[in-house]
Image (tube, rainbow, N blue to C red; front, side):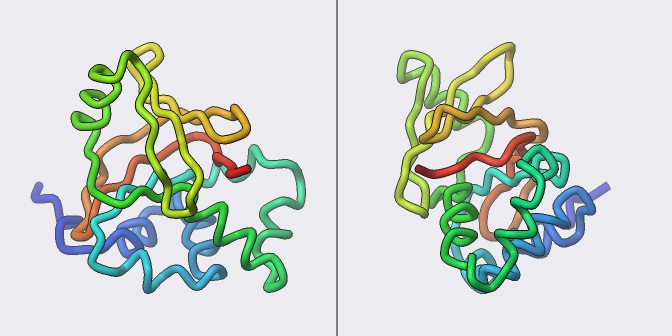
Length: 154
């Protein structure tokens, strides 16, 4: 079966996957649809719906309120890296940098990438971690890596 995601941008790909419905709602609430539909390329570490449910009760609802738009935008753009970094490039960069590769997010803070038990691990500015559970979901303007936990900027 041919991969039809190559013609869809990151937002369209995420919207077509029920595992990302919370993320898509958040992207819409933050007015980031146009940005993430843009030329890119982008690498998005996309939290699944299950990742959002791990947040403390009320967090998602609070972030989706209009008055929380700036915080929501910061959280979402913290999951985005400029450039297209597929899994092979990520693991290669980690290996070449003694087991840890730090990337700058669109939000401005950094995320450390490492490998544990064969999986890519993200460590956020608060030392929280997320694991890539699905890598290399292709899109016309980048790539999506699904993660199991929402990472947070400082």
